[in-house]
Amino acid sequence: MALNLSITRRIWLILGLAYLFLLLYFSLKPALPSVPFFPHIDKLFHAIAHGLLCLWLWPLLPTTKRSLVLLFSFLFGCNIEIFQQFAPGRMPDIGDIIANSAGALMSYYAMRAGAGAYIESMLQWPLESRR
Image (tube, rainbow, N blue to C red; front, side, top):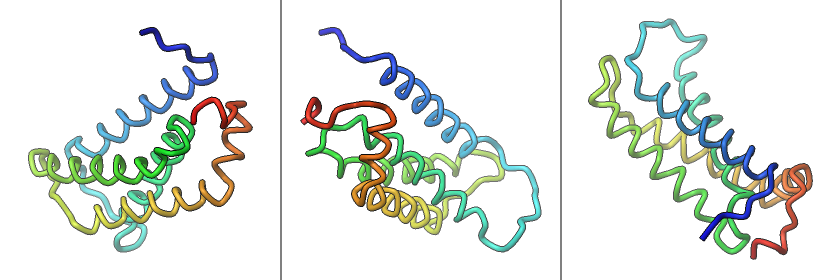
């Protein structure tokens, strides 16, 4: 069965997959010593990264399956934390999982509150065609 995707959807999908791989790469590459701007700033970066992940996934899913963005983001974040124990200079952190989940939740509720419809209108994807 061939996928019938518009060019806009294909670009959105390709950009999202590239983002997903970049997120995975930067999460698992060996850590370099750094001095943070303020303590725990990495948690803010985790929240933003997973919020953007949910923002990308939102218009790809049918309306009835959109809560899966939370599950995907949570499981993706948990897997990253598990695999970080094998990356030099990295270690799993429950705080990162909490920050990932917080970012995903904020994005999810922003999308439900209207940001999702705005993004879909920018992408010109009719809601009815994906139910």
